[in-house]
Image (tube, rainbow, N blue to C red; front, side, top):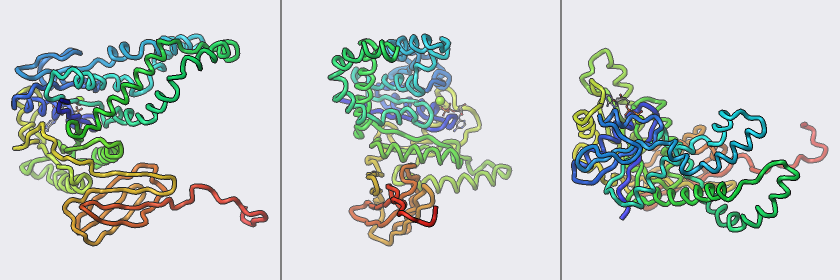
Length: 404
Ligand SMILES: Nc1ncnc2c1ncn2[C@@H]1O[C@H](COP(=O)(O)OP(=O)(O)O)[C@@H](O)[C@H]1O
Ligand SMILES: [Mg+2]
């Protein structure tokens, strides 16, 4: 059976590592064999747990393991052939060796290879719970979102690759003055594509796998989390909780009073933006969250009586289908009855009100020039229809038109 897997993501510095480590400790304390692994190149899991972790699973204490995945190791394992080939080609063309080396690794790819450790733990089945401390804002998860394209390549292009390559090789040498990649390179690429497809299937298994967004009650941090939330939903990845970390407690006193009030307003925004996904909170502690005792305090604050390993929310709460000139958005509003619906779109922000419940969503940039044309409510979910406001195809100017 697939291990329960929880990925924590969010902007740098919001507390991802702390919350991931706290979650892992709680799961282990509940008797589950738990591993917490960091795929963020800025590893701080060792510091957080107070134990030096290696790039392979390292025992922290009874039932708890930690791992700081080495992006370099994973890159060498998965991408060496491509790097060699591309590197040589660039150097031949006068690019210096150091720049060439950098150019052979597209941004985010090394993190992606680190994330493949997730696949490994799913296949090996040694752990009941796998917690991932991800790189900021799930950029890497975004990279995983093209498996349909990848599948197409795999099916259409790769089966014929030997014929294509055999035909192209002399031509490439003679005419283009490039050497086509050898089998080892193509194997690496094919491997990557297969891995992406497999990873995507793992991540879409919403019975076992979910993502939790960590944020602070600050405007910019929240906005970024909302964007992440939108595209996670769109790719069919389940977000089962939102963690708002570093909330000023009531007793901060006058000096921070105004700031605390602003945070309370931001918290209402968070509720409106992520509902019905549960919003968990943790206070701003008077000291750093380092070591077992502080991590457990953080875990208690975040989860209270909840089971940290549970799937805290079970459905992907938004779905967007985009056509050429129209789009449909489905939104879960489980507590709304068939009431008055009002919709307002300001730029990329959609404000939906049903029965006095307000939901605000950040739409993907692709919907920039779409406007909502209607909405209906049935079975606890709201469906909003959009149409492109400017026609996709420009009208042909009529001959003799005066306005040039
Ligand atoms: N609720 C909190 N109260 C006080 N300090 C915190 C809290 N959460 C995290 N920290 C501290 O903030 C710093 C950044 O947290 P960290 O978990 O490393 O963030 P991230 O992984 O998102 O970059 C660390 O020094 C951590 O101990
Ligand atoms: Mg971190």
